[in-house]
Amino acid sequence: QLQLVESGGGLVQPGGSLRLSCVVSGFTSDYTAIGWFRQAPGKEREGVSCISSSDTRINYADSVKGRFTISRDDAKNTVYLQMNSLKPEDTGVYYCASRRTSYNFCNPNVAWYDSWGQGTQVTVSS
Image (cartoon, rainbow, N blue to C red; front, top):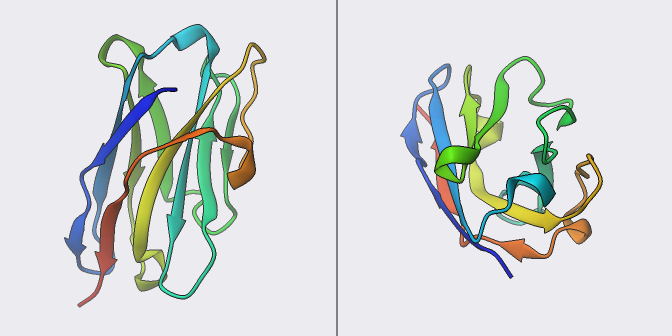
């Protein structure tokens, strides 16, 4: 099972930006899809974005399209989530997750992933 550690969360004003990082140990770039999820208080965890092992398949939730960008640096075993034009409704704990797969594919569903980080808090407030 892979180990994942998120960082980069914090408090930001509406309209601001943050970049989250997810460092993956035991990372095998050819076979690992990564997803970003978030969970607001009292709500279910939801998919934000995911990226396939070869970068060619990327998925975004409708609520973040045009504002968030996912990318990966396999040399650093790190996946990033650049978040721009943040809104109060983006507030929550952000998690990254991984799934080993030989397919060039990623899935925005929570149940598809088998390793999770501990999460990093993002708060968007004035």
